[in-house]
Length: 529
Ligand code: AHR
Image 1 (cartoon, rainbow, N blue to C red):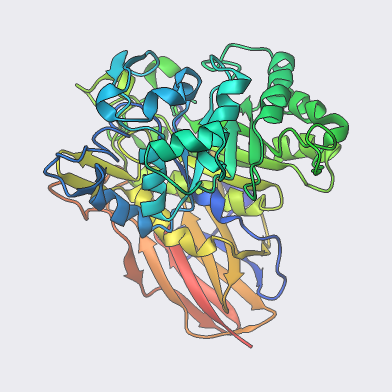
Image 2: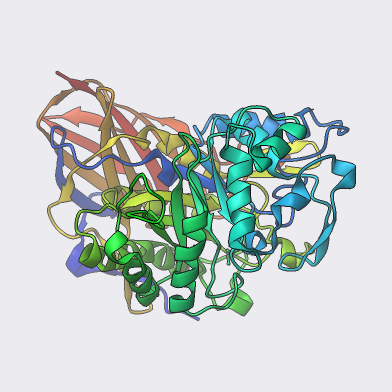
């Protein structure tokens, strides 16, 4: 058992209600880097009920669909302004052979999904279905190519099939399968987790393969690929270093002549999951104590250190930040729900998950100068899902609402938010947990401030001096519940939903509010010219 967390007095002042007091300043006219909308990206793998049952039910289903794609799911995700969707994996990507997923469905070969439940995959959801889904969502596709068990030719032809406009062999094949115009596909992954399920490779070997596969994944017509080399697990900074070395003198350059001045990849990725316990006993998604919650939050806050660590390695090779950092898998990973297939990674989603998300968003904003994309794992029915489906029912999770409340940060510019003293902290098994997290951005004449109080029991009084611009009346929303384990179900779909929050006010040139225990608040401030 972990020792019960205790407040670290050196870091906090106590307010009237017994909670901490945080004061600082927010500069409204110092516009920092733009927050790529793609850090609010998503991930859908052929895993459990993410694709089948989640996104795709088939045209004959009684669930309203277009071409087999669930329209309730599409509608819910459109409300998040979902910017991109990564597919088909994950580990599945390095077993996937794209030609198995085109042409008449009844003729598509089957395969075994060895990684996830050892189930038979009938390939009824393939390239055309995925591109149709992206069109319905208004999201950019991010296709993960197969490096682990595929060939450079296979990947090269997939790019040609998707993006080439003339009568080349692959463009003609696409037309024969019913799609005349090429699609625009910018984001292209060169394999997935090559240090593990993607081939158990050493970094040096993979870096060479990334160069090789990246060379043959070609730009066609006006479609310019943004190739993403599959990166490190967690804090494996050496992996990032080897990938940066792999770019060598080609770093970030592009040129008209393939093979000369060609940048073989434009970004490197890494994966980080919030896992509160040992792998064998990660803990329940819904049955947890306060110390389990705090341990989860310590793991969630590690994202800050990891982003800084990978960015520092990249800075040494690329001070101009031409190479992007991509966190193409992140989120909570708990034990599966009792009675469900262990290979399907189905877990419920509570207010705790939403706070994990808000802490990540703040870190993403602070690293907006390097982080170009992040993808929550995974969008429907798997791990930290936005949506849970069961037959025809659809439930929006607390994490969904955290994404929705934060969508105003997409493509906004970071505003500096500085605290006068370190954020209040708790000691969790010897590790400090900062219980207050915040970030802000500006776009279209208004500022959006995100504030999270991680303290399970106590409120926090916040006072932020507003500098650089006048503001109008604030409007705020809050996501909280009577317990951290509260979650939404088909019977109670709105147990955890954002509510209007009247506790934010601007007084004496400062934004003041009392954040209740375990809450996430967003405040919108109209900026006056
Ligand atoms: O998201 C589930 C799995 O986690 C992915 O398939 C893999 O890339 C990672 O290990």
